[in-house]
Length: 296
Image (cartoon, rainbow, N blue to C red; front, side):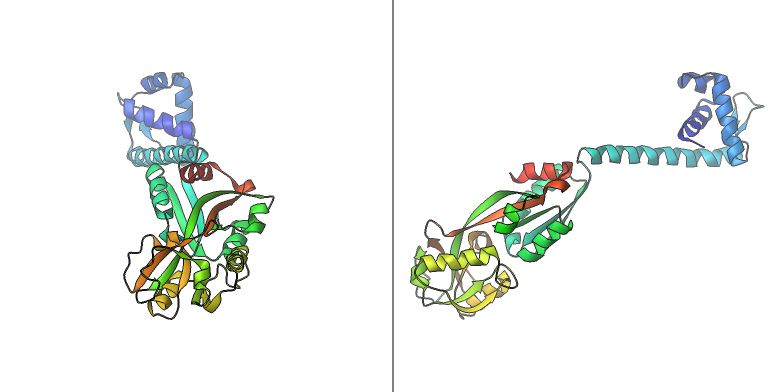
């Protein structure tokens, strides 16, 4: 049994004529009759009553007509989906992102992408930098959003683009002496207990070293009271007036001054963090191409 036999069978059933069905498919009546016979032999039943004019379906033929139409419809759907997949209109996209980046414009970009490509399933995973970069290498993610990681950016099998340069913001509690300032400089915070945002579980990533270097350039070391890679915990500890913190503005931009928190811009030409999108060169496909167009 093959697709042509199903099509010929449906044609004869709808035209109620071997001759008319053969003409619609531009084949001879003999050829279509032979195909229907082969189909009946395969099924072990007679599908048409050939003693009537017009020809009519047998009870078995009526049952098979419904099934044959369903099979052809499903095959056509499958062919359509495969064609869509080949040009990146259907499929899936696995995205990893650093903790805190869910507060950025990423959700707006994902929404825009979903509106353009509704048949692409977007799966999102939030981890720290080490897990994300290892997962990218293993193929767990198609693309990740992470801090500037020197090792990954320089990796020969990884491509990247900088998608955001986010200024740093000082997070204070409302009664702090600096809470009414318009801007602050890092050297003014030298004695302040810092709820320190580390970018990785071990606090030893390229981004962590970059943050420490910013303190050194200002002439000191951070007075670290506590360190965490969980943004919510940091904000809660600052609100509890245990200390202050310095966070990227994408974390704080959607939070209004409230909950005993104040956000003051940190002044300085190097007081920013870069967010990169990274992907493996050998895993690039049409869906990823479409997504890169969206975020570029």
